[in-house]
Structure formats: C-alpha cells, structure tokens
Image (cartoon, rainbow, N blue to C red; front, side):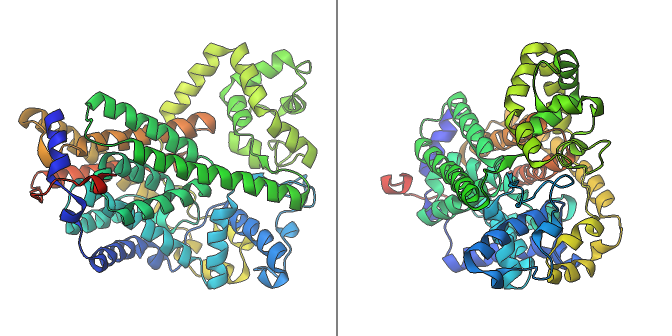
Length: 508
C-alpha cells in the first residue's frame, strides 16, 4: 500500500485535474441547488428551538452598534421574548447571556433576515456543503464531477443532509469540518491555492459558529496524523494542512474571546456557559449519588435542588416548570454559580465514583453512536412566535407549520441507507484486500478511515460532554453514505494521469 501512496503523489497535480473556474463554480452552484430543494419544497427554512436565540443575540449587538433602525422586532422587546429569570435562560437586564450560541452564526441569520429572508442563510450553507463534497471528489476521485452531483442528489433524498442544510442552526458545518479536514490532510498536494483559501474561510467560519467545533477539529487533526504514521505515507505533507486547520481553530477561539469581552463590557457580566456536565452527571446517576452523600457539606449550588433530581438533562437546563427545571428557573446569580461550578463538580464526582462515572460516560458514548433519528421538525408553534414578524409570517405558511411525516420518512430512510452503506463499505474492504489497493484510489482509504473517525469523535464529544441526543449524530451521519457512494465509483474509476510530477510550489 505504501508504494501506491507514493505513486499517487506523482500521478496527479493540481493543474491536471482543475477545470476552468466557471465550470467549477457552475458545478458547485448545481450542487447547492440540489441541497436547496427541501427548503424550496417547504417554502421556507427549517427552525430549531435555538434559532431565535441566535438571531436575537446578533440583533442586540446590531442595535447597540447601529441604533434602533437595525431592530428586526420593533414592536416586541427582547426582554419580553426572553423574560427576566426566574423562568428564562437569557435575561440581559439581569446580566445573563449564554455562551455557545455564537453571535457570528447569529450574524449570518440576522444579516439574511435584514436582507429579506433567512433562505439566504440556507443558500450560503448549501454552497458550503456543495463545495466541500465536490472538493472531496475532485481530490480523491478526479474527473468524477458528474458522479459527485448524482451522489449529492442521493444524499439529499435518503439522508437528513438536505434538512440540515435548510436548518437555521450551525449543525451542518460539523460534517463539513470532518470532510474538509480530511481533504486538506490527505489531499493537500492536489489542491490549488484558491481551494486552500476557500477551505480555510469555510473552516474559520465553522469554528466561529459553535464552540464544539474547535475540539472536534483538533482531535480530528491528531487522529489524521496518527493514521498517516500508521499507513506510513511520508510523501503526503501533513504539517502545512495541519497548521492551516490550527490557524482556523485559532480564529474560532479568538472570536469567542472577543465576544466574551465585548459582551462583558456591554452587559456588565461575562457570558454563562450552559451546565451540560452537571445536567449529564445528575441524569446519568453518579452526580445524584454524589450529591446525596456530600450535600450540603460540598457547598455546590446544585445541592439546593437535590430533591428534584434526577431529571432529564434537557429539563434540567431548559424547563421552566418548577417541578423539573433547575437552570432556567434559577435567578441570575444562581445560574452563574451552577455554570461556574460544573467542572469542579464533574471532577468531584469522578474522584468519588470513578468506575460508575467512566462506565456511564462510555455507555453514553456508545448510545450516541447509534442515535440519529430526525426529530423536532414540527415545532413552529413554540418557535415561530419568537421570530421576527416577517419570518414568523413566512414560517407559518410553510409546509412544516402543520404536522406531517417528514421525521418518520427521513428516519427510516436514514437507517436503511446506513445499513446499505455499511454493507457497501465492507464489500469494498473485502475487494481491496482481495485485489490489492494501489494507484489512484489508495488515498481514498485513509480518507475513509479519517471520516469514520470523525463520526466517532463527534459522538464522543457530544455524548460525553453533553448527553446522547439524536440530533447530534444525525447532523453528520450523511458522511457514511457519502463514503459508500465514493467507493462505488472506484469500481469503474479510471484515473486522470499526467506526465508531469507535482512541482514543489504546488505541493507547498
């Protein structure tokens, strides 16, 4: 296999696989239109519980900078949309603003709404996904642009990808991160400078869009370098693409620091992180047991709510029912103490009950790997009233304003497609071992391994740090059918060869 990898470095060069810029742009546009079909059929974008929070956060910043004419909701104050605690997550008057709801992604939604429609944001997401998938095919299966478009159509129909492209959440960028980092690490020599720049821009925005993305990216780069050492392909440069990803991660972290400082100055207090660790540990069991044995001596704020526990992690953080809610019904000072104490609480629970805690987290990780149902599509009754008036009217005319079967159909098709994809990949592995893997398709195997590792890392980050939840894995599960489609193309693949070797300037 090592010889095949070395051969690849001399078979392809960026100039040998590039089409005219207008052809690449047209292909990307066609792919974006394919992914935009579910949004067009719905006649509007798709919404989640957090969508208004993203918009309102960016709106508050715009109003402070530009004045009241930048307000999308002139007749309803944000404090009415998010009343002062107790009874709400966010209250700027009380100095409560949640970190992790990216103001940068909110700026995309806010700008789109100001420009006339949130469908603009969906179009941006469709272009990013289309470009990323096409870049993957151009890198590892050059000359298969038409097949890549067919693959996009298949993914749009049988996986949740089309839905997540139109969902006004940063979820779709999680899969984009996995695919872009894989392409950069193992296909660097095949990428021209403009491809690297565009990939960097998309990655940087993705890092700004959600605070779970930087750890995912770092873990994926580390895994990619470990795989490269395992496969021993010294001819594939890793330092430059790895540094590019690290810089993009730095952009995301710097953006979060800037936001925290600006928010602190504007609101008078730093943003609060949602207490995912506390919510997970108390629901899982060890957290509740620790509190029973050590409260009130432990002096954790959560000791005051011991009688309510355990409760579902979502109820713990978001429920406004005094019987089950903890974080949302707390006053501002209590919210901040629960948030600030969560790492110390997690370490205390781990020290007190190491076996139970590790076993519980491992179980959560395993559960997250198998959870990817499509849920919470028909939630406009609760979400739409919190949207800007124009978006509210458009949303209530959309297809999902009335209950339907999208969730059931997408969930069934996703599970069936996943089973078929696993069978295709297993067949490809057997075929590769039987016939040998050399030449043009060789780097597709390390790329396949790294993408699958990305699925596993995503499940670990979400299932362990937060809690198992279908949406967390559903947003990336389309990557597995994409790999299956790529390996189906290998059966009839004929590489585009070039007599010229990769120039040092091209490989740098």
